[in-house]
Length: 371
Image (tube, rainbow, N blue to C red; front, top):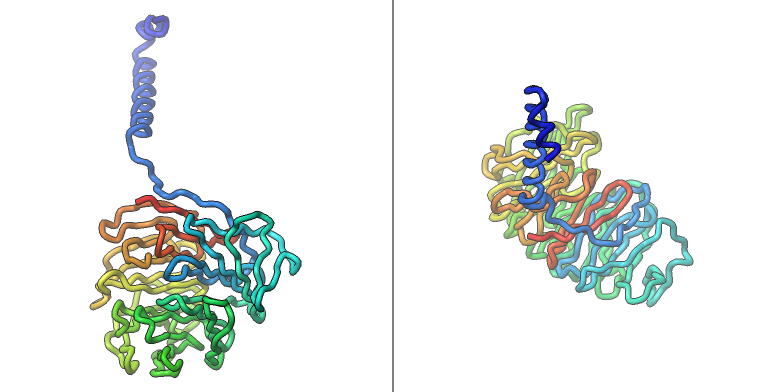
């Protein structure tokens, strides 16, 4: 009442300012009260500290029971988190030593002091400062680890090494075809198509003159390998997409060059190229320290459909969600359905429980996605 009497005797200018302040207050509170929450992701504990080592990719197993993280503890290690049905994983302190691990049947495990914690398996490999990459087979029976001049295969039943594929040098990445019949390996800028029945090279795909391959991905039926190729010229790493036959490595289609350029030493993190549902489009990421970009193009002619922010991307195993630049998108509507940590370098979706794991410079975090 006192305020009302004072308001009646205020000068007109002051009255207008009061009205404006009150209007803005009610509009802002109404928007907060009645608008839906911006983020639909729930952060899951624990946060896993990351050492100052390159984590080039992470991946869940097809059944969602394991999450593989290269260079987790040392420059020559692969951490395999066991994921419980309740989406729980082991914690990991910022500092560990050999005394924090124990061995069973030749396999090392982290000795977590907490009870009823899912095991954390530790694969000890030769030190590699450039970092290893990982890929689970579609059936989940094997884990392929690429690095140095080899691809090391591990059985997920007992985590013992089952096979070594010698690539010559600089084996940086491999991916399985969806049917598991082929393995595409990137080594020294070339792509090798390997038949997994006998692990023999079926075809070698050479880049164009003065070009190198940065990454590759299989189509849904495994018949096509889409590659991200770039000019191997200093300060002129202009990329393009080329598609090849899995059967014989013959060129199927060549799309126009992009206007954007890749950063020096492309392939710091993966994936850089992925197919969308029905293989109608391709998702391509341009890695850059600042202002990275992810684009979606038509797979038949390379015409641009959409641009997103971020120097990383990942598509969910069921092809329903895309993560790029800190945002999770519904691929059916392109609506944002959640957020995760900005500054993420690489990420991976769980195939079973709508969870995404993200790796930034200092930590690994997981988020539950509520669709």
